[in-house]
Image 1 (cartoon, rainbow, N blue to C red):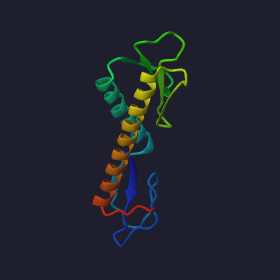
Image 2 (image 1 turned 180 degrees about the horizontal axis):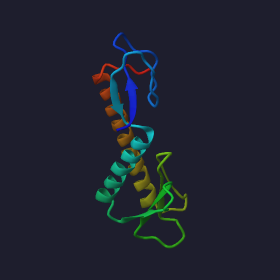
Image 3 (image 1 turned 60 degrees about the horizontal axis):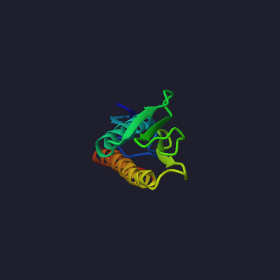
Length: 136
C-alpha cells in the first residue's frame, strides 16, 4: 500500500518522505503515498465533520478538488458555506459569512491540522520502527 522505501543492510543512503532510494540488497517497507495520505486525511476529516457538525451538509463538486460544507442557514449566496480543498488541505469561508460559520471554520481547521499531524507522525513512527531515518 504505497511508496516503497528500500533499506540497505549496511546503512541508509539519502531518503525523502515521498520518494524511494535505490539500493544493492534491499528490504521493502511499505508507506503511504501522497495520494493515499490525502485520501486518508479527507476521509477522517469528513467523518469528523459529519459527527460533530450535523447542521452542515456535504456537497462535493464532482471533480475531486473542493467539498462545500453548507450550513443549514444557507441563503443561496454562498455566505454560509465553508469550502474544503482536498489537495491543499485548507478550509475557507467568505468574510460575509455569519460569526457561527467563521467559528466553525476555525474549529474545523484546528481539527484538520491535528489529523494531518497525526498521520505524519504515524508515517514517521512506521519508518523509525523499520529502522529508516528521515532527512530533515
